[in-house]
Image 1 (cartoon, rainbow, N blue to C red):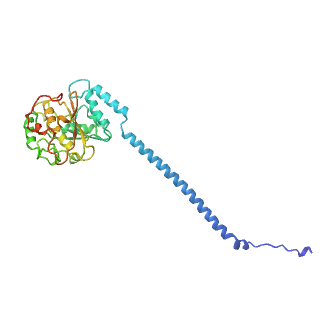
Image 2 (tube, rainbow, N blue to C red; image 1 turned 90 degrees about the horizontal axis):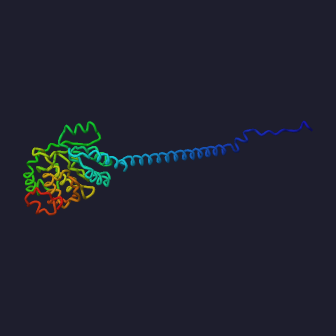
Length: 314
């Protein structure tokens, strides 16, 4: 009979007790796995981007720290052009090129310059990858330079020598060759009359690659002269710690008596590799602590009488 037909209805509780817990755990696992994958992709992309930016920044910084060759050449060209007039202690084009050639080959050069001259800003610019330090006799001039160019490192020195004392100072250095005026020493603690010992302490710890002697004044008897600057350059080169074993030392106006005699005595003629106009170019090798002779031919240098004749073309 139609009235006896029964409809069977399944209660929802049957499904709850059957498969629902398994589905929930699967859903949780899939969600966690999806989140982990997305998070990994995002962080990996960010790390890669950061590394790329860092590398690019470092490369850019490295490229900007090196003076491009066209800029180097342009600065040298215009400096040479402006120095065509004679007088005033300005260097000739050939002299500028001689020093610039060494700076060009010297990465991160330590460059010590005695004297503030027309070329001061040029030297500081050409050696922009390295360290350039200027030493001058006038505290006023040093202050004015640093005021206009705060990036420049310069120090003043009170010279106690005079051009007229040249021969007495040479005799003193020869007498003290194995003591206060020896070629290998820390000048900070030296009492040699020709040693400059009142610069900041850290200056004596630097291994100078290039030294230019273009000061102090030396064109009249009462001027301080360049005896101390040349002697100090010779000692710094032979006492060098770290870096290359050799130091390039340039002496400007070394056709004059003081520059010629002191260069012969302390830098040595066997180390003279180039003579350009009024510029002498020496390459001085460092010595060990037991070295007590400035020159290889020390017997003739230390015992022979001083001569005012030129030896450049010998």
